[in-house]
Image (tube, rainbow, N blue to C red):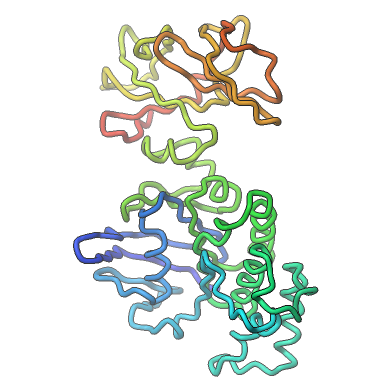
Length: 353
């Protein structure tokens, strides 16, 4: 496994700039996630690293050595696609064995059998080895596709939303299995997703990508607790963050068109207006709370309930544990954790105090 560096990578498709001076590093053995909406440039990034697309500018390196002039085969990467890309008429065993039978690897059949047995046992598909790929379910096919990538131990694994076509329960199961495999094999992995739950639960570090540019790189906690922009704040977190316009007056920020206000952070040159970000779990119901509002909607999710609380013209999301015994139309008091607030300027960038 190796560390990977992208330096000022630019890729254009006619008039569209898919990647705009993209720069980031992946550490050796790291599970690195590219998170962003459709069209952000995530798949293009993978294809550039794999050598399937040639960048218009910039350089890529593995372990400090430029790979820009290397062919895809010479780069020794494994690509797991969103679509399963198996050989439908071959058995599971032969699909798993196919990378090891290539002239580049020249692996003996005894060694192939050993590796296929090991990987199929880890992925729990050893009972499927004699079945043809066309006879598998979606989850089974994706396990085989992942196994085919893992079996030859490449320099880096590139995974392009490999779980997006699976049902919710299977996605959860495979998230756990992929994380376990990556940690036990210490494999350098670049995983692409638009699903913030996958990013937060699997990544060592996350790069948030939009319109071909990196907006923020950090640990899942960094991205969640200290989003660099309102875009990042809205992209990460379920339920969504509360973003509210506020004005500064007499040392307090006042949320516009509401009865909510709180002491402004001590800082020089603080702007008279900003956007305040507040996570729903930091709105706490409290009979002696400083603020009040009316419950206008409830979303029971079993393990927790999302309450929509209207204060003036503002509606805040509040997250409570378990099933709520509150009623729509009920007036409640609540407390806001001021130490957990995020502040953003007029350009939607984070204000650091």
